[in-house]
Image (tube, rainbow, N blue to C red):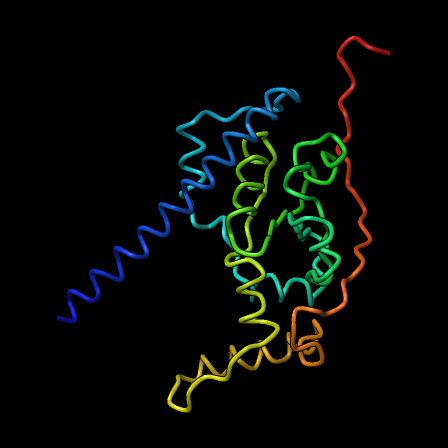
Length: 217
């Protein structure tokens, strides 16, 4: 009986993944139409794109991102792809807003095309952030990632972490200790809800130097 329950759980998870993948593919198909109209930078072949999409290393955990933000890592650039009003209502301190529908516009090219920077997309869950990742990857930008679980996971693990059971291993308590400290750092200890004040992000864009044409002055 337990084996059947496990099989049902596996099938349910697989079904959810296929649904999410379908949504992402539809979103990417629409985005690619815009991409071709705006002039692609370096279109990636479908087979290579599929391999990149299946690479789970493109997902970064909320703990990993929180740690880098706390340490003020200058090589991390976190982008919220939700609408501006959602961003202003609440955002991860230190993040920057580029709505998904604007991700391919020339206005944001310098923000996405930065050498030596890890670009991390996030939204409420993974869906819109995945679309932003795929569209930006398809255009040829490098070092792109998605915050796994989005803001839902951020609130669960960083803003409102839950203490482990008394019988939990030592590692779980060590992780919880970090989560509690991160919660205080990001205002979770005082906010408690999704109405924490939005943080203003001061961005210094590192533009690539253009190579001089051969034979020029």
